[in-house]
Image (cartoon, rainbow over all chains, first blue to last red; front, side, top):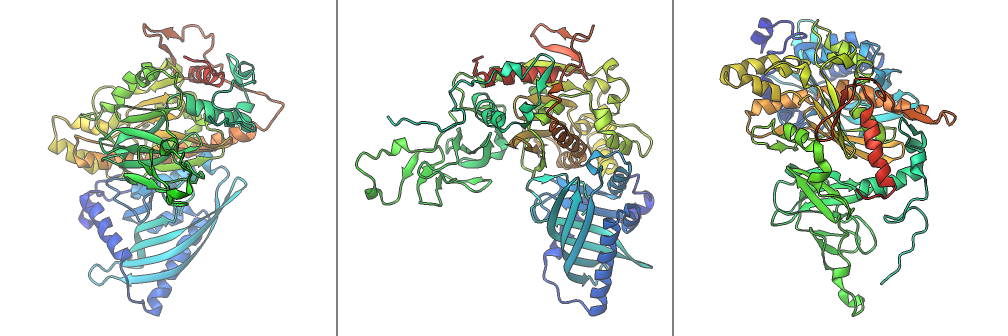
Length: 198
Length: 441
């Protein structure tokens, strides 16, 4: 993966790296995210909670450019339709954003021309039941958590519930998001205007 | 024979006492068609009952005894395949005390047992038995108490339609001039095999169901309603798919066709030149470059065609009253109430192509539901709010009327006109009027 990313370093413009191995990685991440994990140490757990809290705040305050900075070049922001994820090779998702598509999404939100976001969604989210696994071989950090996202837009208040799976890759100065998977409790059911960020 | 009096609301056969022609004029329709519950209730019986309504795709019923739960208007129904493969649709409503007998969205079942009192029905509707039959008198006749049936069910090349209307024409005749367009769309799959198996985008909006139909054949709105998408697409310089709606589209090669029976189509294909052009103009999907490289390397002779079918069909085909073919999706309008609607976008894969093509089709089919349709639906909801002004009674559909040089009529009676002509609305409202007045075709 790192070799490919170097060859086409600007993945916000090019998508050579989303290939068979990219989908295979997702399958593997999904297995890890569904497994039972031992309890993490206090320091690790606190770090993970702080990361999620900061990410949540950036979204809720509409700081989408700052939010985008949390993602690595080979990232995926994934909101599946099939509960739990399904097979993205054969199924569509609410969001299946590689780096370029996620950059598109943020750009789109900031055009000021998206009528589905005029007025903008106001959101506030609560995250709990945080579990962390530092995977020895890969150095990746897996985080599982539950969320409640409250949204208010155009006179209507809504609540979205579900769980996040985060896969973080280590960097010199912290962590970068490799995968953020937002699993809505009712992902395959009717939804009005899902243009908010989960 | 048991007489069945109705308390109010129109029955399936009673003639309406409302002079609908006053509400549908040649160039405008009345606001109450979008806001009045009585209109909605009557539509749910007549429009979603007396004409062919799209129910499901055959690929959703892949084996003998498969079923799919859906609705015909507001009526819960089960579309089933019997053990010989024949298609049926029955009301999901126990003949005893009305509980739904099937509560799964899809599956395989030879029979359905009502969870309330245990009445059991074949998947073709016949009553198999009621528990403890000694509690019914000697004249209890099982053949009278099957599940009600959608009396006519037909498939056109995998598209299953149903109607309660005995006087409706044969399905193929009802589709009429829409058939060649549907054929084009189906035949993009090398073996004509279209598959609905993915989960669907089930999008909801707070507005009347007809707002979706008004929009589907509308070539006027894209450069305004979809400004965010067009702006996003030009983030990296190139203008992409749909940008041709921007500059006076009426002077361009795109046309809208009024096909009769309420159907219409926008043909965007004249904007594309030659094989590979549809693919070349797509907004960039995840994995696009790697995919194109792979397809060109492995299938050099066939690459352009494979790339083009990985992107949308470039026609917007509207089949009245509830089927919209857009891109590679089978979109279904499902009315919920006078001011609430579900739009289900069924993603499709196709047979006879490498698996990578279908993966790329999934990525292509995530684009518009994420960045295009929500802006339209926001506008539908704002239309519904605007319609609350009782003093302003009319919704206009007069664009293109009496405009010199726009409309020509071909040998099949199809009217061809400029892409922003609102002829699609005038066309389907004529069909709506016919159904609401109970006139036969």
